[in-house]
Structure formats: C-alpha cells, structure tokens
Image (cartoon, rainbow, N blue to C red; front, side, top):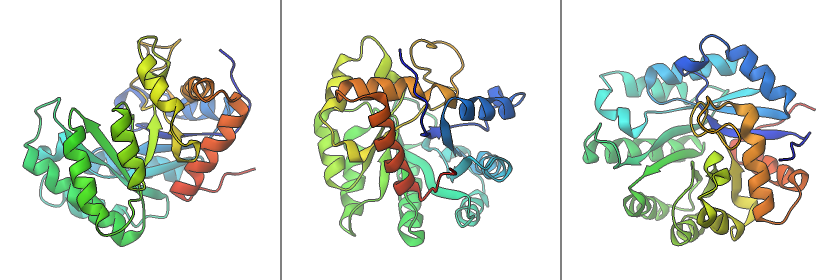
Length: 265
C-alpha cells in the first residue's frame, strides 16, 4: 500500500491513554515524520480531558477535544462537568466530546448518556466549537437527538468512526454533519463500508485512527498510532478513485476548516 508524503490530519485519537505513557513524544514525532501535520486527541472524562489539553500545550501539532464519553457518564462526580466547561474555552481545544450514545456496553444508564449528550450539544452551540459523536449500537437514537438539535440550526459535528448505514450517512450529512473513517475502512470484510464511503461527498469526510484502537491493515491487532492514518486515507482514496495525494489534500482541508486549525508550513 502506497504511503504519501503530504500533510495529513488524524482527527481522532487518544494520546493520553496509558499505552502511550512511555513513548508519547516518539509517537508524535513518528506521526510528523509520516506526514501527519496535526493530531486531534480526544478526552473521555474530566481527567482525560485535562491530560489531552496538557498534550496540546506540549506539542505544537496536537490539538485537544474535551468531554465525557457516554460510557463514563455514570462515573462522573460533582465538579467534573465544571472542568469540561472550563477547559472548553482553552485556545488549544478545538471541539467538545466525545459525546453520544453507546448501547453495546452497559456502563451508564441510557437517560444519563442522553443528558450528557445534550450538555455537549449546548456547549458546542454556545461556544461555536464543533462536537464529536460516539455512536455504537444506537444509530436511530443518536439521529433522533441530532434531529432535535438541528431544529436550532445546521449541526456542526462529526460522526466519529463512522460505520453505520448509507441511510444514516445521508441523514447526518443533511443535518450538516461530517463523517470520519477509521482503520475499519481497510478491513477485508468491510466491502459494504467502502461502498458507502465511495458515494459520500468528499468535502464532508475525515480520516482518523482512534489510536490506540482500531489499527488499520497491515497493523491490525497491534497498538494503533497517528502515523498509521495514511493507510485509512489510502483506502478512502481508492474508494473514490482518487490518488492518495488528492484525497489527502481534500480531507486535510476539511479537517482544518472544521476544527479551525492552521497547519504550519
């Protein structure tokens, strides 16, 4: 698989995870050497969000997103949401999340997940910063909540690790959402996902790693890292019958516009 020497953006990863604790600087440098000009690291609770902001302050190519993941809403304590509200104003914070709904795991009551989803949507509108959505086994319910919020105006969010139906993609796009693809796009069995990706408007697409999870082929089963986003980019380019260079230019411009990032030349 061809790797490209271009500016890429990994729009979703978790650099604050324990698996990066001993070599995060090496991971960031490796990404830079592999053409990743910007990395968006995502908070999953108050402590994780603090660490994400600290990483964004430490590395010029790293930006932070702060929020409470739906699976961690039940573990949130008094004051945690105040931390998210405060951090959301930080100049290195480019979005809020990841938020949304998860019906695969049973870590938090559905009503609590919905409450926190609404909180993130409200902060997004109030601050004019985009939001990042986690959706697992909750497609219709997530879209229901997005429809309700869209009554206030076009949405400014992204469906992270998109793997839902063509119908879901069409509706989300119609509400103003962007769609982001992970290494799952490279998995041999995911012909249907590649077919869906091939029919989506290029100006609304991102690539991401979700590192340390969902490593693309040929690294499947290993720790993922931002440098590997090139493999997902190549799969998306092939689906659209474009060169990797062409798709890199498109997805990087999309991400920079969405997150308000200016890449260093």
